[in-house]
Length: 93
Image 1 (cartoon, rainbow, N blue to C red):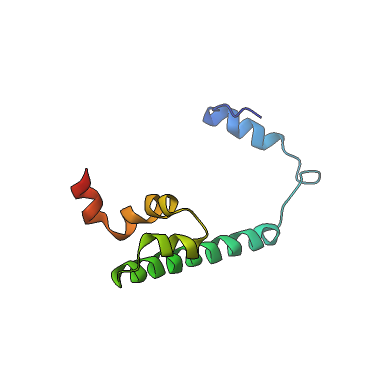
Image 2: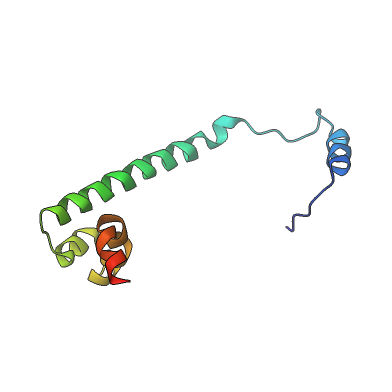
């Protein structure tokens, strides 16, 4: 479905064509579970980043962190090093 820009007048005309008796309505509760899952994921991402920072701060090598994450050594470094060790990334550039 291609979205096109409407003028204010065109948008208003379309709104006026809507019949409230037959218009399909959605209850906000229909998407509440999605919004809650996003909040849980965001919190989990924050916790994961904090755990990686803590591990690196204690000298844990990237290969062990990668193993815990279930990703490759390169994947762990690429994803987390700029977030965990920004000074080292900047100096390497």
